Image (cartoon, rainbow, N blue to C red):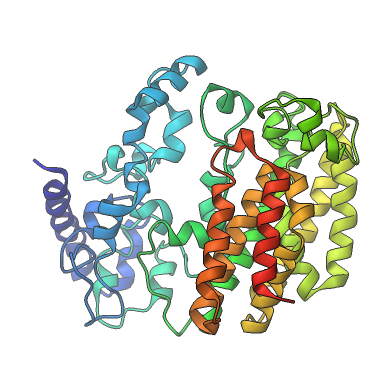
Amino acid sequence: MARNGRIFLLGVWALLLLTPALAAGPPERAAAVSGKYVGPGGCAASSCHGSVQPKAVTRIFQNEYSIWIAQDKHARAFSVLSNPVSLRIGKILNIGRPDQAAKCLVCHSLYVPTEQRAQIFELDDGVSCESCHGPASGWLGPHTQRDWPHEKSVSLGMYDTRNLTLRSEKCLTCHLGTAEKFVDHEMIAAGHPDLTFELDLFSTVMPRHWKMPESYETGAWRQVQAWGVGEAVQLRESLNRVSRRAKDTKGAWPEYAELDCFACHHSLTMPLDSWRQERGYPGRRPGNPPWNQSREVMFRALVEEISPGAAKQFNDESTRLAGLMNQLNGNREEVGASADRAAALADQMAKQVEGQNYDSALTLRLLRRVAGDGAAIANEGERPAEQAAMTLDSLFTAYNQNAKPANGADVRAAIDALFQQLQNPSAYSAPRFAAQMQRVSELLGR
């Protein structure tokens, strides 16, 4: 049976299995079966989320499953584990077939304990609905009722992705990692890509399969809020990861995945043509690979706009941590303690970022601040440049949609050209990227 047809039938089966549990009493009885994962089949019926075309008769479009299965790369996360590159990674790491290895399945599938899998659960569905929305058995049946509140589903086991902090945390469990699932230098050496993240841009290219109802949307500038919260949570969790790795005395140290990959892995040039040697190596001994600070470069711009005092306190601690990380073999205890302090500060600022009012003026100031700092960002390396390009893309998308500047097409073209500078990371040129950032800055004005 074709996969779509199989999952459609499973969706009907799921509803039939779960509905009788509700017949004997009120919807709250569904809590008794909470905690089981039923797979995407439970969402696939055309009257639920499997419509081919969006509908306007309910508060949701009802084509969310169709978007996921046809367009979302998460739906193919499991299948890529069988391609030649993945098989080679498995061989290098000596873990066998990646599509059977827990090390890979924890992020490339909904890899939950057997006792939490319903009969209709299939591992090969990849990163499916419940990977983000939580086990559906408690709320799958009752949440189809008219006027069923989102909060009731959350109380029955649904993960609250409307909350931007929680949404970021959920994404980052794979796009940054946890103590149990991670990408380290060994995996990168075997062929796994390094991990990057930017909540709003990643959400946009998924592609987006949800509405943002007025009841929880922050006006027209929700995208900017999502960008800010994503940057704050990503920074906090990356600092927690540094601390965790520094304190793990059984793990490798330094863990090179925390450092700037392209400080070492870059195309060699004649010394006369080396922008790195022309720049020098401020804050570290030449030859020491620097800490990858790309996750804080953009966050720093935001906090300096909304809370200069907090920004100074964080920057002081971040500078202290960078000094420790940029040593060839920095003291693990000192690194862990500094990372903990910086993570605590990032957590405090994350709450302020989520509660901040975002508007046209703030968005334009952020755009100008990032673009205007182009030369410094470019000199920090490819990863900060990549983060800056993603940030400008997200912020300008929101600004262009709502403020409609007269030169919007020109600014968009200039930002798109930034990504062209990042197509071959090992050949990244700071002077060329800085020049393109200057072009963006000029278009945005002062």
